[in-house]
Image 1 (cartoon, rainbow, N blue to C red):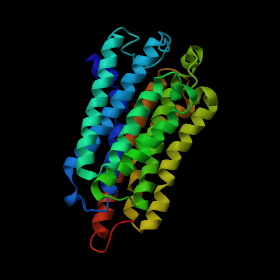
Image 2: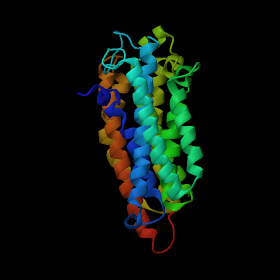
Image 3: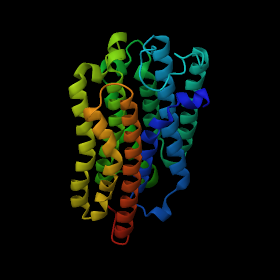
Image 4: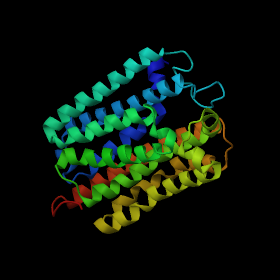
Amino acid sequence: MNPYVEAARPRTLPAAVAPVLVGTAAATRPLVTVSWLRFALALLVALALQVAVNYANDYFDGVKGVDTEARVGPRRAVAAGLIAPPAMKRAIVVALVVAALAGLVLAFLAGWVLVAVGGAGILAALGYSGGPKPYASAGLGEVFVFVFFGLVATIGSAYVQDGYVTAVVVLAAIPMGCLATALLVVNNLRDIPTDREAGKVTLAVRLGEARTRRLYVALVGLAYLVLLPLALMTAQTWLVLPLLSVPVLWPGVALVRHAAIGPRLVDALEATAKGQLAYAVLFAVALALATGVTSRTGALG
């Protein structure tokens, strides 16, 4: 595999795709009137930011000596010598430039308030594992993921379609944030021993193994519980359709609950990513169906 593709961590990219799908479907306009150009631009911004964060994490953990041979999981490009640190820095810049350019076009089409949102996202991406006090090493990485790959990505994707935000969109953003955060939680659970040894104090290191496992289960559970008030508020039973994704997510839940820290948690990460994408696709279909039903009488939410 190309080292830059490998360093982009394809298994984590559903965290960028899922909220854009759901946010677009949660917009009040029927699916046939969606601006696919705005959808494509929003998706490009989300993917580019995700890749930039992954590259930055690879770079900073590599040069700081956090990634060692003892680390379990996919190899890191800088630590393994596949990509030189200066080349990885250039790759980070390229990913951020792609996100910025796509974001500027989107802001021109949908509103200049998006410039401020995009700027905050870029700064947050850089501060995740870089700078003198990276917040991923202060136990705040999960907050970043929940906010930017849950709330901001979902609400922003709906906003570029409608020009405003509804209560349905805000509620729909919560499970997207929960599942994206669950991806990070299982990743950090796997890395507790090596992160602790390297002095990287993630939330998982702070909480310890047992409470980190419970946090993962709580995040997945909340993603499904939110469906109930959403269905009741809109009177649209379509919105419980994501429950069909439980069998896809369940292997990840079972592994996180019972598997020892080690290679099995890599399987848990993959199962979580697949489950998140399955949830998002079903949720997007449900929202599109609900919007189609209500489009003749008024906006959903």
